Amino acid sequence: MTDKTTIARREFLKAASLGLALPSLAGRLLAAGDARRPNIILCMTDDQGWGDTGYNGNKYVATPNLNAMAAEGIRFDRFYSGAPVCSPTRGSAITGRHPYRYGVFGANVGHMRSEELTLAEALKPLGYATGHFGKWHLGTLTKTVKDSNRGGPRGVKHYSPPQLNGFDVCFSTEAKVPTWDPMKKPGKPDTPYGTYYWNEKGERVTDNLEGDDSRVIMDRVIPFIRDAVGKGKPFLAVVWFHSPHLPVVNCAKHRNMYPKLPDHAQAFFGAITGADEQVGRLRQELSRLGAAEDTMLWFCSDNGPEGKRHDLAKSAGSAGPLRGRKRSLFEGGVRVPGLMVWPRRLRQPRVVPAPCSTLDYFPTVMDALGARPEGEVEPIDGVSLLPLVEGKTDRRPAPIGFQSRSQTSLTDNRYKLITQNMGKTWQLFDIPADPGEKNDLAGEKPEVVRAMRAELGKWKKSCRASLEGRNYGRSGAD
Image 1 (cartoon, one colour):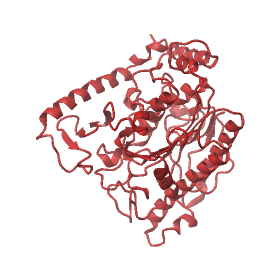
Image 2 (cartoon, rainbow, N blue to C red):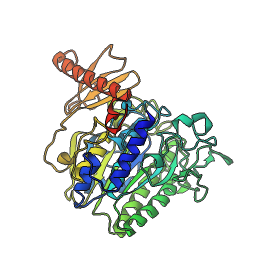
Image 3 (cartoon, rainbow, N blue to C red):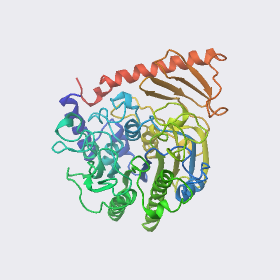
């Protein structure tokens, strides 16, 4: 927004990093700094459907490491991406705010505003090392050369790389890359794909870019974690895999695990297995470093599976029994695999049936550190999940609002209200009883529809106010 806002925000963060007394979120956290500070890792795959894991019943795909996380930690059976497409979900994961509050309406639309407070920026004043690895998709990464969808001179106004959003170390792409040999165009090994990896200095990375892209990413994550642990610093690592997003290319090792399936399915499931292997490698390294106990490790996907339907010959991704796929606000478009392990705090495995979301990462981390997320930018749409994951309640305290193009929905513990045509018609579903959204109850329960429409209207009005910049006054905006 305004230059005044940006300057004030940076002064705020600088003051927090020096430990000055602040009446804000960072100040309160610093005052409570004697508490143990867990490491935070946010892992996310790209276009992996709810049904694309072994623990959710997929009879083809090999995900032994995700299965182990589900058995050992917290399994969220109703975990929702912040949106049915990529970029908005990513913004929700690092701000706790719905992307319609700051203009990331879809893929390659808008960018992370400098006035928004990201999780990395909230944690840096507390001594955290912060790193982003993989797909960014919240702004361009270079102003000077052509890169990806918008990077270079044509997209200067959308320049917002991870290093300007609180991340010390970066190994990031603007958007998608092939899942094998990520810098090369599939089938044309001598032709660059056109989307590059960039570091925190704004330099193109040119080494160790061959083979499985998930391994390429993890090769950067592990040294970052080793360095932080060696220095005795807590860390935030945001690890956003490209797999299994198109173009899906894979090695013989992973493809050969699925010899009876069509070629596309072999590649798709192979890409998921490759990412799963790297999650296992990450967990092994945390154990070797003695950091596993104090690490809050999350896993999810950014939206439902690509394609119009589940067809192993064309579109292997599965939403399981759920209705809809990527780009839809029906369950299959936004309900995704969701897991978390944190051995020191959560020693007993638990299944959480209540709705949870990527919006909840920010407030949950803040709650774990001893403060409510009442920070520089409000309102926060997410809630702390600690009461749910610790078994103190089985209900979410506030509904989850969604908006994507002409679609809007509101999801609470039982009901989901949805419109696909800008509110011309509405449908109501009892999600625990009808996860496939087959039985529309809008005609039977008009009172529920009225109440939820009113709640949804208030939320959308709040989002519009945010989009107009009205939430940034605490940072010194006009």
